[in-house]
Picture 1: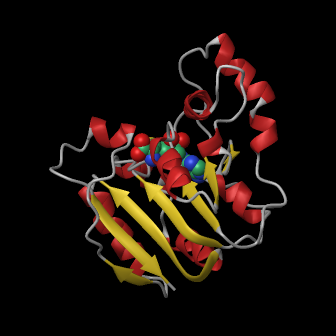
Picture 2: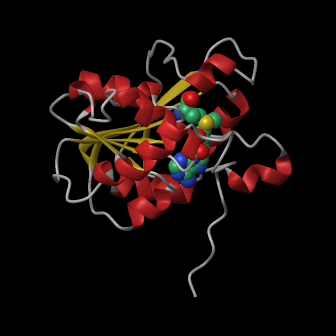
Picture 3: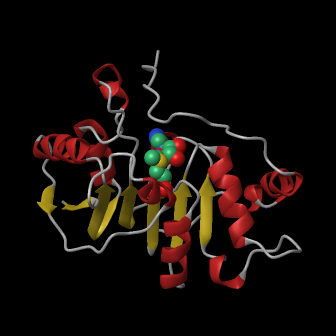
Amino acid sequence: MEKQEIRTFGRRHGKKLSARQNLLIETVLPAIMPSNQPKTGLILEIGFGAGEHLREIARQNPGKIIIGAEPFMNGVASLLSAITNDDNSIRAEYKNIRVFPDDVRDFLRDTDSQFEQIWILHPDPWPKARHEKRRLLHADFLNILATHLAPNGEIIIGTDHWEYFDWIRTEVSKTALCTHIPDIQTIHTRYQQKNKANTSAPKYLVLRT
Ligand SMILES: C[S@@+](CC[C@H](N)C(=O)[O-])C[C@H]1O[C@@H](n2cnc3c(N)ncnc32)[C@H](O)[C@@H]1O
């Protein structure tokens, strides 16, 4: 029997969705789920939250397909609202977005796609010691991500939880990935604005094979 994976995310549902958000989930989401995507020119964002950064990279990379994975349906609904016109068609600048509305580990298990970039911004820090096993970015998962990197591809991680940052670096040291501390300006996402860790700035890490 397959080993049950530990859940790395908090909620799947938050406050009640609006009628329009429900409609978008029923009609637009199925049309932009990833399937038969090209083998090259792919970017993945894991845990995109409300999708601010996903939308930004979609605008910056019109020639690439941007896949976002997020199990929190209110976040998915926020993204769908932001990328659609009043008539529910996808806005021209976001036609390259695909959404997997669930655990990214399920998506990666079923695809041989390779990504030029894999973004993970503010992964849930699970700060209580008894929850540490819920952290997503342990060595085994990083090794799985490494198998999905295109040649010269990179994994870009950002967190304002400095203790988690150090923990991730320890996990990285158990893998064959090479670490680079980049000079990235703060990337503004909804979670970054909250800055629950109360740190002065997020820290970023770029990993390559
Ligand atoms: C702290 S939030 C950050 C959201 C967003 N990146 C931001 O900066 O605003 C972490 C997100 O990761 C998502 N997440 C956690 N585990 C995940 C998994 N296994 N696959 C995909 N998303 C996951 C959660 O649902 C949550 O929305």
